[in-house]
Image (cartoon, rainbow, N blue to C red; front, side, top):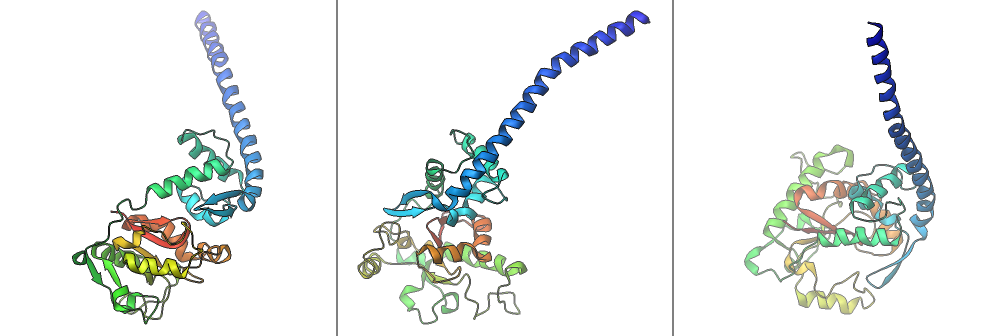
Length: 280
């Protein structure tokens, strides 16, 4: 019995000696990650508004306008200047084959933009007439919009109506609704600002806005397909000034779209908070 007890004690000691180094390594790695995340959070606090980068030939400053999209991409809920957010950035960087620094620098931001852009419509062929329908004026932000400018690709319109119904049903958004649970006539949020555009009409818009650049009015626009919708999400409907986009990305409706639009087949154009494309 005594020998057995001694033998058992020796085995336990040996097990502890084997586990201890692994525990120390894990503890050391945990401390290292915490230190990394804290340092990354301090850098992110500066880069949030001060990072210089270019999008569509237009100089940009900071990534604060993209926080809702970034949070969805990296599956984060924390403040963008917190260590937990930095940890989520590091995890995404590692999964993407990049240095997991936790710092949302220009290289990381461009990689994220690449993901968003890759999810957009690839085929931008002009929709044939039989694929389009004319949506009722009640679906549009502008109550005087001409009939020829109210055309939408059929499947896109059906998905849009399903998405709006889901948004109206979410009482946290506070959207005006009818007794039937539909979007109220005087509710502006989520109304369509622009849908199908012919190449001729797009060229007219480009002539009227010569400084829009490639980030704004594209030569080969996804609106040609009838599957791109500009939706009202607040502020000036389609103004790309940073102050206006900041207002838009902070609205509950925009943040709801970021979280939910994909369920209905819609993907965002990151530069324009109002622009959503049906990609199914």
